[in-house]
Image 1 (cartoon, rainbow, N blue to C red):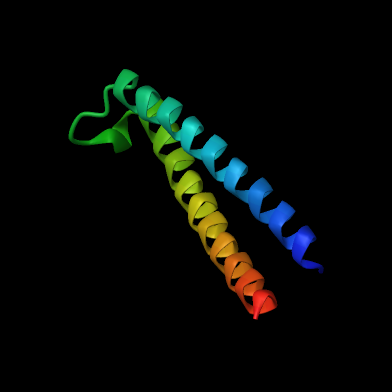
Image 2 (cartoon, rainbow, N blue to C red):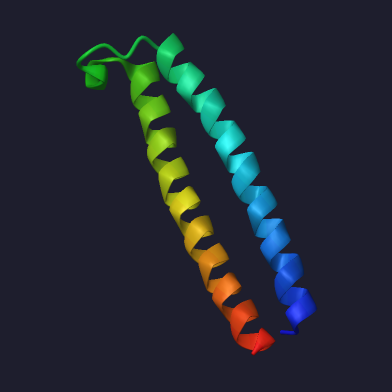
Length: 79
């Protein structure tokens, strides 16, 4: 990949991360609305929200790692 392609991919991933974080705000509100309580495992809507929350964390961490790797590649190309 060229430096320009890497920078474009980096911008795309950063935008995707922002969208992902905005979606997390919606999930957080759903958690509040589902009334988690101390034992959310007995509450089916709360359980579904928590599963989505876990998926979000995995996606977020993958995006952050990929962004970091792209930044490293871009820095190497500048040398």
